[in-house]
Amino acid sequence: MLFAVAGTAALLSGCANLPAQKMAPDEFPVITGSMSRRNYTPIEPAFACLADLMRLKRLPPIGIAVGDVKDYTGKYSQNEGNAITQGGALMIYSALGKMGDVVQLQERFDTRIAELELAYTDRRQLGDGRQHTVETGKPAVPWVPYYGGTILKSQYYIVGGITELNYNIASGGAEVYVNGVGAKKRTFTMNIGVDLRIVDTRSLVVVRTASVQKQIIGEEVGVGVYRFFGTELVDVNGGNKNQEPLQLGVRTTIEHGVVELVAAVSGIDPMQCIDATGVARATPASLESEPAALPAPVANGNVNVNGNGHGAQPVAATPPPEGLAPQNAALAPPGPSNLVPFEFGSDAISVQAASVLEKVAAEAAQGRQAVLQLLARDNEVWAPSQRRELTNARVKSVTDFLVSKGVASSRVGVTWVPAPTDQQITRHSAGFQLVATMVVAQ
Image (tube, rainbow, N blue to C red; front, side, top):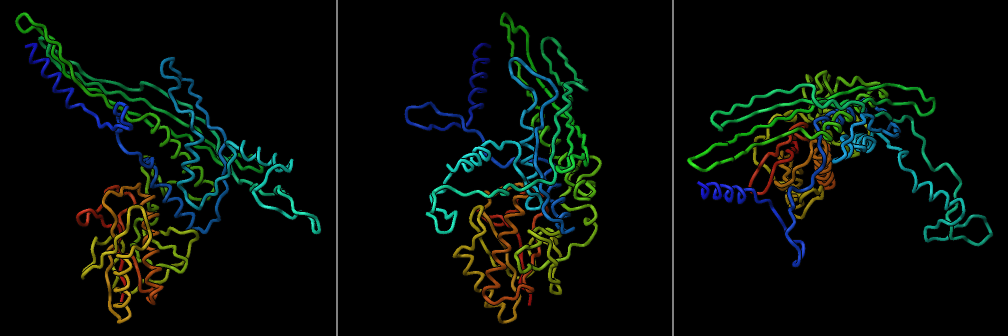
């Protein structure tokens, strides 16, 4: 029996090997784990939705700064330190950055470097490696002249804090053992809450407040044997414990609050992008029931690839050619397709893609229709908003190339892109995935 237990332990230890890599010949291997990735939260689609609504209203970029967002829960462990992240303000900065060009972020949280350089400038100590003429007829000077007014004012700023951390608002489970053999299962629920406000910088009027909470769930299961087999006592236990990441819950809750605050100062109903249950939409609720018309690329390259616009400024799209399918209608339009491959993370037209597009342009000059399938490496896995930005850039590159070869932009359109909330890739062939389909109409 002892040999059986020892063999089982050895087998389990062999199965638990983690990937390790030797960084230097004289070092022990270091466990490497998973690759780093972009931090994605369930609220992310709502940022794309809100940004699209702001572009649809033709709003200018809103200047927003971030103040201190503290942990006010007071929960502290002598062994583990603060239970809640102290980086709430940094999470808000990242959340606002997901809005793209509709928000202009003003730095107010850590201005030490800027203030130090302004002080150097004021003392005529700061240079940029060039000579500057300060007064006509006098020698140039090596220091940078400063006449003031380079720091842009903000319109609003966001402050607040993490105000709730309730460890056990519900728990339950069962544990059964018979003759030293049994199993157990336990579940528990905790919650966190944040309170944020957005303030008009000039008048210090609180424009809107947001109080948001989120529950964090976890479970623990286990089995065990504790009994005598003859004269030998065997004690074997196994189990698993899973908990939703606490700090990810904090980030998600803060992002929910940010969506509500930015929507308020933009005159937009946040329920268009986050419903009452907290589910985020990538497409505004008011547009979900409308048929998705195929937009044609516009002159400034702001290609609408998800049906509701995504460009630096809202631009009226050219009416689509007749007979084209609406977006997301099919992965592959009928007819032979021309494959346009892109390198990993790149929107540049490769030599191979250029050869295909030149052939398409020649066919278009003869009045023929062509179907294009845009491909990327199958190891490209992005968050939906980042994938959409890259898809925009790739569609623009293809459109610009065709236009440069004499194809009218009104003949080029997008017929399929992945749904904004779809986190899976669409495999095309060995080593490639399909990222968009386009058509050059007759």
